[in-house]
Image 1: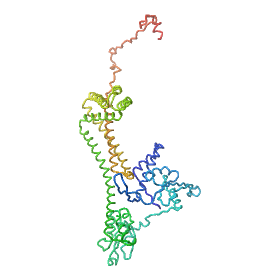
Image 2: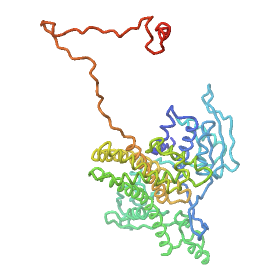
Image 3: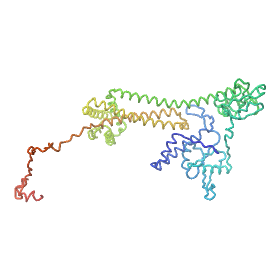
Image 4: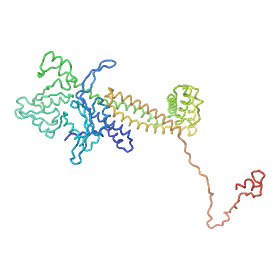
Length: 535
C-alpha cells in the first residue's frame, strides 16, 4: 500500500471551511482553491534538494541556495485538477504542465484514458499529480499507473521490514554478522556482543553518510561502545555526499586533482573531517535560525502586547483620560485633513466637501461648518478651525453629562474599543504568521517581513482605536426615563356610601352656530353662506 500523508496545515483547514460554505461565491471560491494549492505545493516541495550558487547583488557577490536536481512537471487530472495548477505555478513558475484525463468503464470498472498530453522531457522531471477529488484515491492511483506505463522512471521507497527492525538490529553483535541499516534503525535496541566477538575487537560500525546533525553521527558512533564493550566506528563518504557537495571546500577537490588520485582511493585527512564538521555546524545553525524565527514572531507580538496592556492598565486604574481623548480628537482631525486635502486649487471645494462628510460621520454635527468657511483657508488653518469647533462641542458634552460621568464614559468606551480591536489584531497576526514561510521564496527574511507588516498592521489598529473611540464618544446620548402624563383622574370607591360625594358635572356642548347666524370668521355673511357650506 502506498504511503498517504495527511497535511493538517491550520491555514489550509481554515480556507477549506470557506470553500465548503454555501455562502462562498464563485470568484472567491477560485481564489481560495488557488491559495490552498499554493500552500499544498509549499508542503510537497519542502524536501527538494538545493545547491549553492553565486549571485551578484547590487552591492556585492554572495552565495545563495537554489533548487537542484530534477526539474518538476505538474500533471492535473482533468477537469477538476485544472483549478489548482495556477496556485502551484505561483511557487514553481518554471514547471512544465501536462494533462491526463480518464474515466471508469461502467461494465469493467477499469480506468480508461481518453486524453494525455505530457512535456517531451517528462522522463527527466519529478511529477506532481494534482487530483482535488481525492475521496478513495482510486483516480490518482490509476493516473499514476498510466503514467508509469508510458515509461516514466520511478522508484518506490518503503519500510518493508520495519516490524522486524528491532529483531534484526539485536543480532548485529553476533560473530560474522553483517547488518546493513540506516543510522536511525533500531534506536533504543541494545546491540549485545555474541561469543567470540570481544576477542576479535568487538562491533565494527561503518558509516556511508554523514548526517546533517552531529548528534545523529555521535549516536551511530556510540553503537560500537555500548556498556564498555570494545568496538570501532569509521565513516566512508563520497565527495558527492550532500554535505560535501553543498558545503565541501573546493580546495579538497583541487588537492585530489593535483595528486592524481583514483576515484576509488580512500582519503583520510583532518581537512576533510573539519570541512564536514563545519558543514554540519552550518546546517545546525540554519535549523536554529528556523526555531529562532518562532521566537522572533513572539517578540514582535510581545512588544505590541506591552503597549496595549499598558494602556488597558491605565484605564482600569481610573486614570484621567481627558488629555488623551483630546489628543485623539486632534490626531483624527489632522489625519482626516492630510488624507482628504491634496492642495489642488481647482478641486479644493470638492475635497473640503468630502472632508466634512467624513468628519460628520465621526464627530462633526451636520451643517455646523460649511464649505465656504474652509475653502479659502490653508490646511493648517482648516485643522485649527475644525479642532476649535469640535473641542467646543466636546466641552458641551462635558456640561451635558457632568465631568465625573463623562470621565467614566471615556474609560468604558476606550476599554471596549481597545479590547475589540486587539482581538481582531491577534487573529490577523496569526494569519500573517502562517504565510511568512513563503517569503523565503522571494529572498526575504521572514522575521523582517513579519516585523514590517506586523508594525504596519499595529499602526493601523492604533488609528482604528482613535477613530472608533472618538466616534463613540460624540454619538453617545443620555437616556432619560419617560415621564408619563396622568390621563385618568383618581377616584375613590364608595363601598355603599352616599354617592353625593361624587357629583356629576353636566356635559357642556360647544357653541353651535345657527344657519342664519353671522359667520364667526368675520366675513359679515350668514354662516350657511360662508363657512357653513363646508359643514
